[in-house]
Amino acid sequence: MLLNFAQYPPRCWCRTGVPALLLATLLLAPRFALACACGCGVFEVGTSSMFPTGAGGTVYYGLDFQDQTHNWSGGHEAPSGDNNDKDLRTFFNTLGFQYMFNRSWGVQVEVPVWDRTFKTDISGGNGPPDIVSTSWTSLGDIRLRGIYTGFSDDLSTGVTYGIKLPTGNFKFNPSIVDSDSQIGTGSTDILLGAYHRQALTADNMWSWFAQANLDAPVLIQNQYRPGPELDLAAGVHYNGWTVGSVQITPLAQAIVSIRGRDSGANAASPVASGYERLILSPGLEVDFSQFSVYADVEVPVLQNFNGDQLTAPVMFKLLVSYSF
Image (cartoon, rainbow, N blue to C red; front, side, top):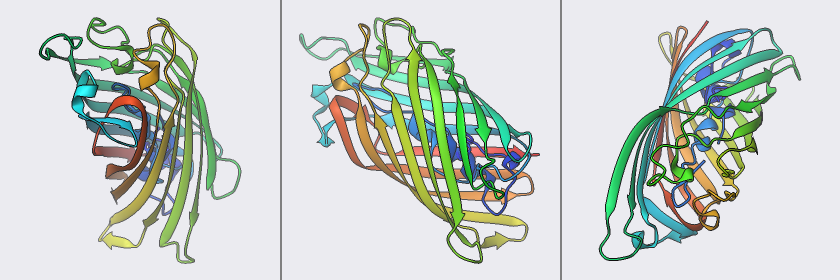
């Protein structure tokens, strides 16, 4: 959510010492693994730079990447042969716009375009493996959100509410690509989020933030209901580094992601869906003039998957924004 404040930021949040880009990363949210569910929601939480700090707008581009190559079952890695799916590699491109009309109300729009490669064994366990690979690029599920930050004068606390539209392709090559590996889910989801940020020291050099995002499907198509997802993030960042007019903000954060089981007649494998994850993520934001560049690395340290699911050993995030 750039709001995804945190993941999607704008000066529209008006920065007050908190990097606009970080905040955008915090507020957006949603899915990881199942036989190979994607777990893209985790990219929507995690930084405080995009939290709004005043009226104004922001446009941004986000690029997230994960390559799900490791089979995981329960709390440990499992043999690759236990899962027919072998690789789910995705580049998540997101174009976003966020605008705060005043110090209390704002809106956000995110348009995702994903590039995905999927490899799976179609032999059915009969004879030697027959690995097929397919790649495609498609519009994803567009997200529309409202933002309210009128709880306090400093805009330190806010909530988001909105909807995920079923604009993504959820019927690409269905003979090979299961419902959990499609770019679109086919569902209309309710999106709810909240965040808080606060200084840790009197000089405002150190700050902390927390964020929560819920993605709950309410209307479905094609007899497939993706599991609801809750993503939580908390972190600290240091505001005291500057080089000339450039501000450099390092941060450290922890992300918890919880996803329920898929259901419906066309769910690929309800038994092998749903998970809990703890992810640690160091990051860095660079702000100059009205531009912000944010990047982080996300490393799962604790994972518990139902059944056998593909997971990525590391994930990457890049966000570039312009505030006005």
